[in-house]
Image 1 (cartoon, one colour):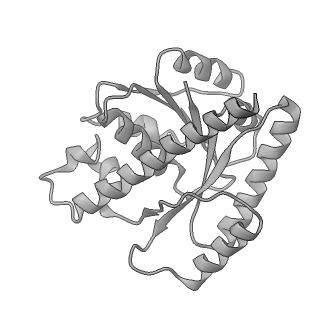
Image 2 (tube, one colour; image 1 turned 135 degrees about the vertical axis):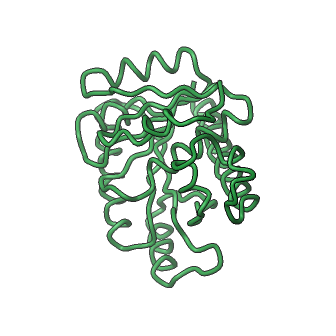
Amino acid sequence: MPVITFSSPKGGAGKTTAACILGSMLAEQGATVTIIDADPNQFVQEWSQLPGLPPTLRIVGGATEETIMDKIDEAASTAAFVIVDLEGVASLMVSHAISMSDLVVIPVQGSQFDASQAARQIGLIKRTERRGGRNIPYTVLVTRTNPAIMPNTLKHILLSFEERAIPVLKTRLCDREAYRAMFSYGGTLQGLAGKGISNMAVAINNAAEFAAEIVQRLRDDRAQTKQVA
């Protein structure tokens, strides 16, 4: 079953939010999902203590450098999707998780510093590829954007990624109150109905597009691997 890791060498890029949005959207669609909380902050674990998670969504904490690979293996044996929220440093645990990934998602906000850190993370993925002797697909996810305006800084960053042939998801996770509210009220975006959160339908559509693009990317990568084999 596909293993999707969310990884960035810096905090605050939107890893945990993106991982929980993806996991909850897939679970709402009926898929069995395990999210492994491998971030010392344990924000996914805190979210799991709140009400409203789908019964098909399981949260696993306590991952360490010694246990992360076993936890991924165990989750992959029972869940249709395994999502790993990694710590915001370049560590051996991060390398272990990346080595087992079918897709690494690198969240980036619209700043040059985030873009530089993404390039650093891609370097870690490439080194992990060489050690493991296999291709590790990855993509950049732009987070916390303004849905109405694209700043020139972000345009410049996206052009830089394009010039270096760095894959970027077409869907961007916009800055939405609903995404923050998930961690206050608990549960999924769909479960926030009736709680007075603004622009709920738009937020759900944005999240659904993100999840659909991730799933399609996994399918495309799998088909390409089969053709090569």
